[in-house]
Length: 406
Image (cartoon, rainbow, N blue to C red):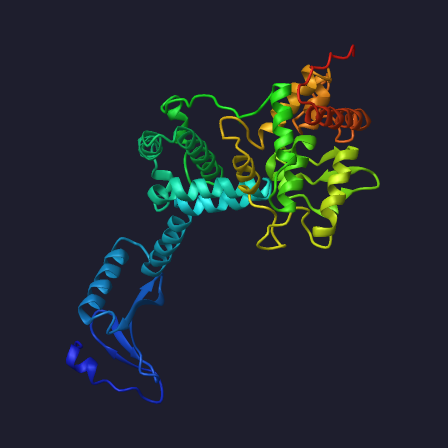
């Protein structure tokens, strides 16, 4: 006799499993712990098999019968219901692994191994803020050029043209990763070339006129803030590093005796070790900050925690407090000041300047120079540069130096 809801409700557990049949292979398995489980018995290729439907009352009698009927339909079509159920589960798992959000996370983790930490942090923030809210839940394989264009156009329409351009670039990188891992057919962002307004070219504000740069150096010398900010700000023009490379300096990288600072590849934009010869002036600055921080990890620790370096705003805020706005001077702009003034006033060779700026420099055969190449020449250049900065800082009115004959 077929089961009824009333009959099922009064079934009590026994010392062992027992079954109560419904019809057409459907039965209820009652366990000693009181659970009641729907099963469908069927045969495939002469072998008896069981198909699990679910537990009562989460799966009602009516729903169990409907699931049984669906399974019987599959049998008539020559399909195994259990195998089809497993295939559907596998497809759902595959779908979950194929969303843009999951693929983006895999890509970010993969790239983090190759990128400098600061860069990885910026890219992750951009992807999470600008792409994942609209695209994260979507299947990567189903994304089209118009889908992606709507997202980045909204960013651009808000006036953030450079952010939109970079978000589109990151989206393309994620889609290409999806294609390589078999979860998309290709990169639809390739169709969006020229779809966004091109941002106006911009540069980090920099002072490249000798007398004005001397004024900046004198203002920095008079800075009255914390010692770590003061020393970092005074050191920045001498070493011409990117602000993050300077802020995250660690004592383990500094060899005072050899007058050499070796920055590991993981901190560098070009992902190669960078060696910075230290002028006498820079050595003196390291010695000045030493009593404050040399027992810790960072040369320029955060005032809030010795386990962290100065924040990215600390040096910039110091410049603003000295009266230099963002259109006049930036910490990153010291690199442009070095590149221009060392060329025009000291007559430095271009390849030595590029090496000192940690740019990719190649020889006549297109091979990247070894990191130790021209180290002595760069040591001489950076000493001349520090001496020149002293002259600029000490002169009320600077007469530009003549270019050397070399």
